[in-house]
Structures are given as C-alpha cells and as structure tokens.
Length: 121
Image 1 (cartoon, rainbow, N blue to C red):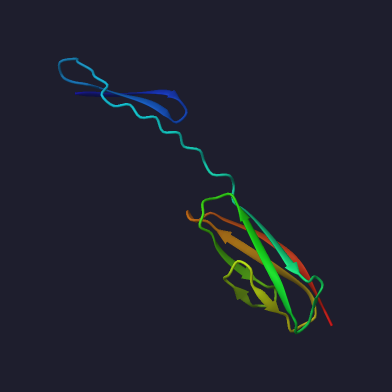
Image 2: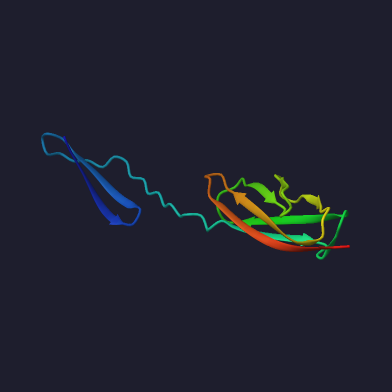
C-alpha cells in the first residue's frame, strides 16, 4: 500500500491510497476550509471619569475577535482586582489610576486595554 498527498492550495490536500496491485480509488472526498478567527481585542472604559473618591465608578470591557467564551480580569491601579466583565470599583485615594482589563478567549489568547481614571475629591 502506498500513501501519497498532493497540496492543491493552502488548507486543501488530496490524499491518494494505492494498493499493492497499483489500483487506486477515491471513495470519499471532503474539503474543509479553516479560517482563523479575527484577532482578539479588548476595549476598556470607566464612568464617571473623573471619578470621586469613596464613590463607585463603573467599568466596562468589550471583547471582539478570538474564540468565545471570554473570561475577564481587571486591575484597578490601586492594588485591587476583579474578574467580571463590567465591575464597579470604589477608589479610596486621590490621583490618576490606570485600570486594565485583560480578556482571555477559549483557546487561551489574551488581549488587554487600559483606561486612566482621574480620582478627585
């Protein structure tokens, strides 16, 4: 038995099996096209911005591309973190804080985006 493959185009192959007598036969043909997913992207935002100390701010993280489902993680720039897509967070100190959302898709690809939150009195 002899096995041979022919590359017809990217992602399209012809598999041909020949027996010991030189006979070949194609009894099954299947074409599969594999398109990679678009790149995973994250987009983070905060509201209100500027935020007020000791009052909650709402955060949003939108994901596109990659392969769903997504998981989310946040760092808020003050040593705290969260694991929901759209959390609320209360800052207890003044100043600019960089909040970062990291999105991970089903196959482990990650993307992140940050937003600077100005925390005032």
